[in-house]
Length: 262
Image (tube, rainbow, N blue to C red; front, side, top):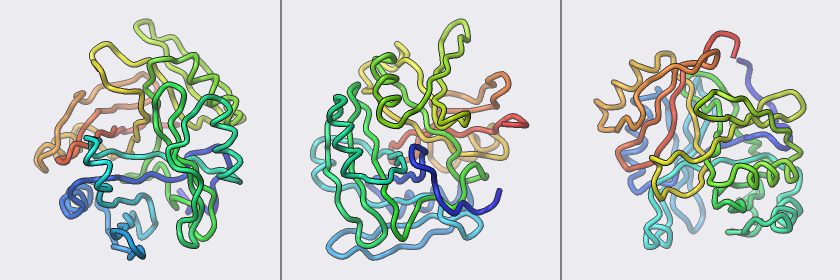
């Protein structure tokens, strides 16, 4: 896949990890996905680590802020949606029932972002690109390939994102569950499903999926690196083979070997 030069507004453009152990996380993901990493200084803050595949930026990670740790927030991956104006989009999101967790602010000279909580409780971020437009590779092995919302109110969440980003919702019935694919035009940009009963009290949340060459081998390797397999590898017809996993610090994510043509 060629290097991505820009991300269209309303598409996921970046992911990053807030972790309690940056050194351990860098070692884990580098061993699992073959990342190379570079620590970038951030004035007045902890370093921000850039993760790369084939020398191209694919993700970031940094030590979790003390105030989040004090609140008991676990390590987690965050998903960013590209927008043309973070201030205006955050304001629109608030009018649609979202909470603004962090109003739009400049990230040095690389972009402007805002952090939001959708009406069902799932966190996500907005990214208005300047020098950094987001991931240079998407869908390649070791890079993110999909973002999926698990929510306690599918109808409310679907209406919110459709109004905010202009996404269309396509619902597929798989018998035991219904799955919503969000489309920007005719292009799939993300997914959504109802929170399963076995999730207990887990809040609504976005999950990041990474592309792998072999789901089963990656799951076994992850276990050897002290990670956990939460949902063992299994097939989704015409989609691929996936597993839900957790890194040693507790951040949850998905891995998937997509089916040909996906």
